[in-house]
Each structure stands twice: as structure tokens, then as C-alpha cells.
Image (cartoon, rainbow, N blue to C red):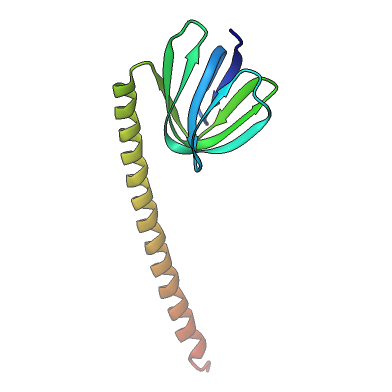
Length: 137
């Protein structure tokens, strides 16, 4: 059986497997699969689950928060903000749900901070406008 290497990277970790037989993922066009010897390939992965099968036959699930996948020189590289690996599909689905909830909460907080910053900037601009319109003695 022909194999290829899989490199998974996020800001805090890197995992390399050199015994991967197949990789199944999803992008905007739908699901796709990669086998050893695939021609050069680049795509943007969707948030969700992917999976790969090792030479020994075991399947490992990969939960990721989107990312980029490139395949070149019989090596697949996935760069993402965060990923989880597990052989138990249910457990990794729960981890993905938790990650989605955390990201949504972070996004809500960032929007609130941006609104507050915008309000403060407008308030300051109004104050500057009032100060500039007063005659100087």
C-alpha cells in the first residue's frame, strides 16, 4: 500500500504522520479524497471533520476550524487555527462543538469591543468639533 506524509499545524502544535493511506476532507465544493501520489493540490478547508486512514488500517478523525490544505511532493500539509485528533468520532464531534461555541463567544465579545471603540471615537470627534468651533480669545 502506498503512503504519504500528513503534517498538521496550528499556532501551538505540529503533528506529523508518515503512514497515511488516504485523507478525506471538505472544502467549498464538497468532500474530496487524497491518496498517495496525488498531483499538486491546494484548497481552503471548511470548519468541520476530516479523517485519515493509516497504513495499519486505523481511522483518525480530525476536527478543525477551517484552514488551508496543500499537497505537494507526496506530503499533505494542513495549516489551521486549531485542530483536534481522536479515533472516537463522537468525542471529537463534542470537542468541535465546544470549539465552535468558544469561537462564537469570542466573536461576540470582539463585536462588542469594536462597537464600544466606535462609540468612544465618535464621542471624541464630537468633542473635538465643539472645541474647534469655539472662538479663541
